[in-house]
Image 1 (cartoon, rainbow, N blue to C red):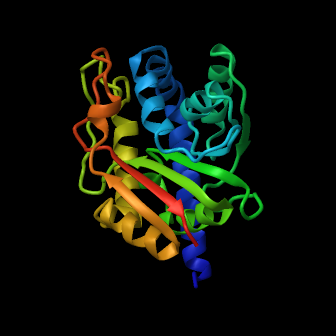
Image 2 (tube, one colour):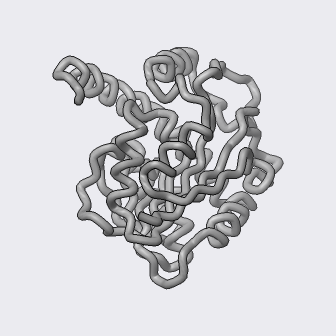
Length: 248
């Protein structure tokens, strides 16, 4: 049970995280547009399609949709997509990108840890590079389990960033190019406050998801499968893939 002091501290941290991503949203969106316009979009689509349950259209929840990358991919596959994010800046970018790529999805401002959806609402919950930024990733996983239908699929792609110190780069092809020193410092400061930064991942995720009622498979590093565009340079932290099916 969280105390009032704990809840107040978490709320303040959430507002700080939201402000950070609002500031990051234009540059972040530019990277996602370059991915969508290049070969990486097809590589991501191939990876995801192999893990989807049968049926069409599927109801898909894109948690932390950011600039709408997965919302666009699932729209292209003719599924029904709802994308949520706490950052109004990111949602504005997602809407622009959906329109630019001729795609449709419902976008809603919402906390990934407190979903405003009924139980068993979705066939698929998907997320990318989100859980490492959450004040309470455990609660987020509980919520994602709750809104999934029996037999539904959770796809989470993330990195173990806890022991990483991010730094500015002069490499203009790097996906983190153009982020100023102040934002880099804020990112590191926020990361170091998060409980999830103390866990070693994806081992921690596997244990929690299994306890919640998922069967879980993990790829330690999917980067070679989805980063095929030579014009984009990513960091060296492995990008793991979690594929979890709700079994109870």
